Image (cartoon, rainbow, N blue to C red):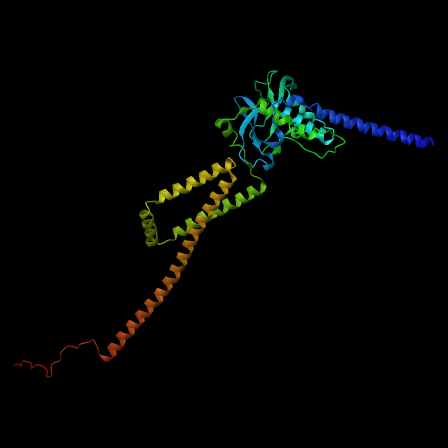
Length: 383
């Protein structure tokens, strides 16, 4: 009997806890959870979406560039209403608040990452020297965040350690999903007994991220939008390097083979080829210069990691070299066969001419003998 009463008491206590949690959730909605991000701007954020584009240093400040889209259900496929930027700390504070807000409405407990402390300017001692560090843009790419090093407590004057102004701190847990569209308002399935009648209407205006960047952001002009484009490229991986080496070696081998075959060309063929180039307004030096320029351009594009352009140019050069090599090979093979056949015909003609001469000599044709007198001349008498 006592056990039954205890069990009933436990169930009642659990029900009371659930009811209290439901009341807390409803109160959070009714009170406008994270009202400091709503600004009473009257924006119904459920109709909007945000797309973080890149992180750049603009006017000596690390900023995140983003676009705001109306009709968020289109997943940022339509034209944006504008392109804006705000400082990395401001954006990250709003983004962390958005994640906390989403977790709260989903009924989960949000635990901020340990490295989120670097969103604020933080003092740190490195090699016995006092520095200040704060989250900002990564050197060499516009698609990630790193902890930058500063020499002042306001994190405005950049400094460096061993030639780098990025600290060696793993902040993979506080990254922004660049080039990933997300709706401004997070929706989750809730039951009517957890929230009141005004939940669905009020929640349309709850967006810590979009509301913050909308109120604190600035318009990203043409110069701002062009920054960070040239470094947003993927580097060469192992497979790319292997294929790049194979295509380069193949091209070099074809150049060496072409050089050897051209040395074996007859003077007549060489003159004909030079005449064809002259008719096109080219000389041998021009062709060599063009090839050297193309190779230099390929090297430059490869060094700045323009992979698609590098592949196209390299394949094009290899194709041209292969086609010219095949032409030389076919021409040399045809000429070899042609020379052998001409010799046989010439020999046959010479033999026929010799036979005709012999036959003519046997028949006396074509030969006029000298005149022979019928009677010998009379010799003078000897006295």
